[in-house]
Image (cartoon, rainbow, N blue to C red; front, side):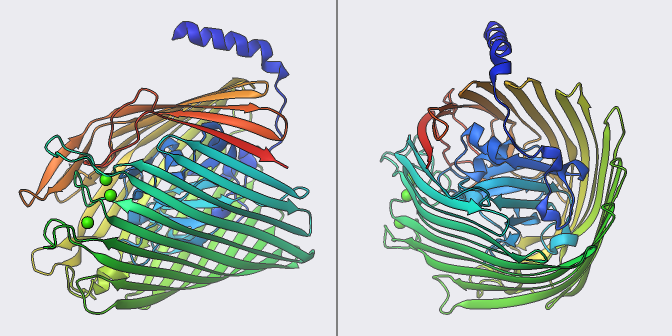
Length: 636
Ligand SMILES: [Ca+2]
Ligand SMILES: [Ca+2]
Ligand SMILES: [Ca+2]
């Protein structure tokens, strides 16, 4: 291994100077659009960024795959190719994360915790993914107690061009997509359409006691997204965009439990329009409206006719969020940016469980007032502070706060950063109104979950080739909403207390242009205070490492991800009991390579799980074995 490294280092040194530089905005200067302000990555306190270059180099086809290389973030999926993918930011619950696509909140209000499922989201046309960690309710209100993930799609910015992507490989996976885009100072557009299909592998793990083979669980998806910008005159710009996808999935019943005829159809659409008008050199305002809808249909044929082992469920869920916001931005000499905004958000949930005679339809709304100030003094001292008041139609007023200072010392470039915040998560419509009394009664006395949290960190660049950083974090979640099964039907109550704390360490090293090394390690305690135990599926130890090598038109990238052992549990239908289990730790290794045949045509290859490690995110569900993919990208 060591000799191999030396060989590569020598080879890379020899041709390092031949590699041409790529034109791109330095990471430090990328504006974090989730902040709704002028705050750049370099001025921010608790942000991670995944760029389109990271996605391309690693050959990631799903957002859920690339999120595994972010410190402080755990991604748990019950099988790839459409399996439910949940994110835990710094050990928080998946419902404690606001997920945005181009600023549009895409959470599904018909789910129990008002969550977003990353399982069906491909990386096609993604420019970058912004991850803000810690309480951020000031900007987005409810749900941002653990953090925010904002997915920014690509904007047309050149002469008209068409890009075609072809991809295929193991599990009979094929993906075909095309993008057309263009952009100048007055008008830009980018439209992508594609489809992905895979025969897959069985989601449920076959236990040795099962004597019939388990069915493969495939995925078929069609998707389209677009982004448009128009500047009729200097003082006015209009932006709009949409995403739409429809996914068909084969499902299984539960951990270790196959089902040959259980299906989901999911339709996810979102859209927005935003007008930005400059009133004076120091004052602009924007008016935006957005909507996001998720429609899930589950159909399962009752194989045994008794509704016992196989329920034969046919359930329908529709969740919609509509949001409008008026935001004023006052800028003073580039050193102070003040945002003042008012927002109105309405959410709808429509649940048709096969056991209830009628649909359960509910809605609620919230009006929000917020102010955030970003101060920047001499490229050395940065401070962001914000406050928000929300009036929810069901439970009334709720306040949120953040304070995020950062200091970058001149010459040595040491960055000290911190973040303190208080956020909240409103109970979901499901938690308040139940499911019509099948499993869950209503509880209109539910209060919001609350979190106060902070982090402190240090970053140090060295000799322009190395950056190291470490951050300590702590969060206290109160009034956590849990299911109370002491009555039947049960109901959701405010009972839980969760404390999460730990630290994230990371480094990037680029000794020469032709070589980058990157790695991260996260230690997380996520403790349920009532039982004093680590929450399920939260590894205490996790980390990743990547090596990228560029040799002329060729590049190769290795990524290793490590996830330590975790607690999990599953329901054993044979004994009618919940069984506690420990999931083993694992290291998964992937290699991706690219070769530019011509400036317009690139071929790529990827080998995933090269050591063929057997591992699971969720007990009783399979993850991919060693698998291979090839792709072609052509720009016309
Ligand atoms: Ca199966
Ligand atoms: Ca199946
Ligand atoms: Ca069935």
